Figure 1 (tube, rainbow, N blue to C red):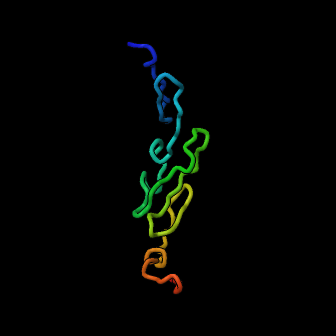
Figure 2 (figure 1 turned 45 degrees about the vertical axis):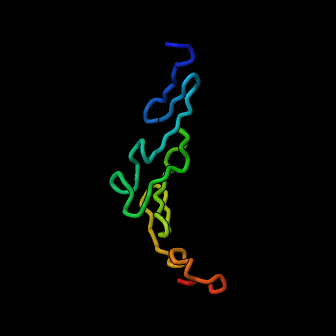
Figure 3 (figure 1 turned 45 degrees about the horizontal axis):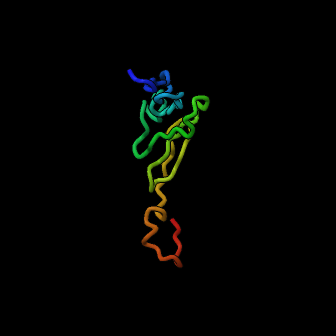
Length: 100
């Protein structure tokens, strides 16, 4: 080997690595622990998002509804509601406004 090619790798369930320096380790709970919204995955039209991937920040993943559906829930399935105004906003003129 050559100089400066050593590598630090985080230990599972943390992820991350670096060459010739300390690794920055993260835990994405949606990937690392399968702690997602329904039976290992988010419900239809939802995505799992780990709000803070710092290893000391656990239990902060959320299910977020995919746009234009609105809704978020921490540690479980979100109740998703379609906001027709947000979904169809371009069809309203600026002076008209929209109520759903």
